[in-house]
Image 1: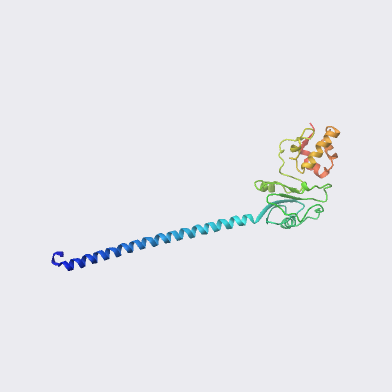
Image 2: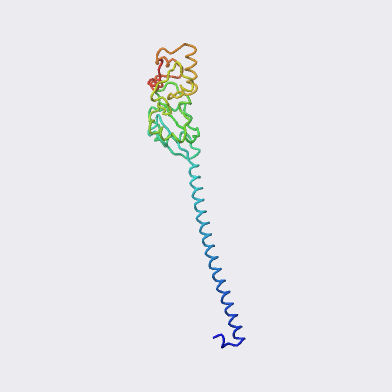
Amino acid sequence: MLDNLNKNQKRILIVIIIVVSIGFIYYIYNKIGKNENIDLDENILVTNNLTQEDNKNTQDEQEYVIVHITGSVKTPGIVKLKQGSRIEDAIQSAGGLTENADISKVNLAYVIEDGIKIRIPSLDEQEIEEEDILIEGSGENIIQEAEKDTNISINTNSKNTNKTININKATENELQTLPGIGGSLASRIIEYREENGKFLAIEDIKNVSGIGESKYNNIKDLISVR
């Protein structure tokens, strides 16, 4: 067929073939480039959406605190509150106070922190200290405490479920593992022991200032004088 064409016709045919080839290559190149841009834009959009969702979840977590409130409230347990909430807010979230609640020594305006345990005293308790109201805890064990502790006088941080504490030999740290016994009370027990000699009976611990009948009932099964 080409043999029948003269030189000018052959040149024109070659030019047409070259132009068509260039056009085809240009078309293919543009199509691939657009697809890559679309995939890239989609990946960026998905990544941005995931990042925004993660940031939102993190922000939501940071805006709340979880605390364990027990004692003289109507529905003790775990409550989730906004950051900056106060003990008064925790009490309301727990259904309010019971009839025998004693808030005379409770700082209702105290700004609560994540993971703490709040114990609202009752009128039956004779001597209340700040350490009996606010108990530092951790986010890891707070739910376990809520399952075990629904009574004002029980502190589930106690490590002595299977053995008793000898109050004649116990160190300050060991005494603090007893429910309701904080640093100041533990120091008083040791001071009393040093000044008056060994406890002859577990009931003698009630002679220590700050340990009344209610607190004694909470620890009597966990202590000994052996």
